[in-house]
Image (cartoon, rainbow over all chains, first blue to last red; front, side):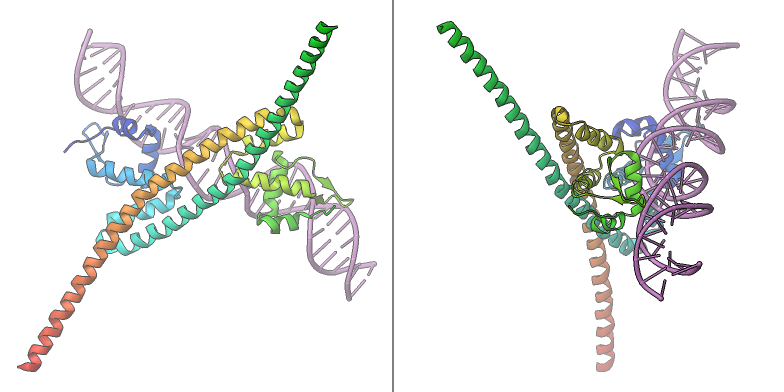
Length: 143
Length: 143
DNA sequence: ATACGACTTAAACCATAGTTTAAGTCAACA
DNA sequence: TGTTGACTTAAACTATGGTTTAAGTCGTAT
């Protein structure tokens, strides 16, 4: 089995080493082994667990909840129902948040549209001034 | 024109009064008038501005950026290009975040599926035991 | 008159999620 | 042998986004 140093885990998931240490301290990465120099060794299982943690983090689950979930994983199979419930609830929360963001984005799109129109109008007014000057120039050339 | 007290604004947008005061202090709600008792009066324009602030907040724009945007609004029409740029950039950031959440949700769905299958299996094993007992009972009744 | 409810302020306080620092250890290479 | 680079620790520090507190003011209903 292949083990990663913290630097490799950091590179692989693009997460600072300091954050990985912080996660371990907070209990999100339990049971990490050490080599005889005391350095963390991330097993493949640990890397998979880390990926799960990142998933939950990306969907804004608070660290305390992630810790509870990890604790349940460590505890074993008799917590599967609890984990299932948690994931279902979290999924609903995430869907609600995505919906809120999607709705709020409409308000932002309204701004973009308005500003774009205003700027188009300003630009066309500038063009109009340009034409007037052109016309003036033409006239003066005619005269 | 109708004016709202802070309590009404709080109710309307479901935001604590303390947060509204905090937003004003941070410059997200500039130019709020006061009655002769010193109480904040939210005009319809202010309410519209507040709705915009909430939109940006819902899409995770940091307060410092919201303040910059509001400052540009107060500054006037010569900042429209800046505001348009900001909203366009923000929209891209929001779309990226929604995408990340949507992708991460797939990992969560995998967990839900796995746990559901495990529990179904456990349940069917329980049923199987139930059948055995029923069979045993039946046999014993036959005997 | 006074008590009440809705507000006001500045400043302290809180939670969350890290980041940074300072001092030290270990293994390998020059 | 000593210096370098990758790590270690605990603890202090930071940023963000509020929330809470304490003390006070105003206008109305009793």
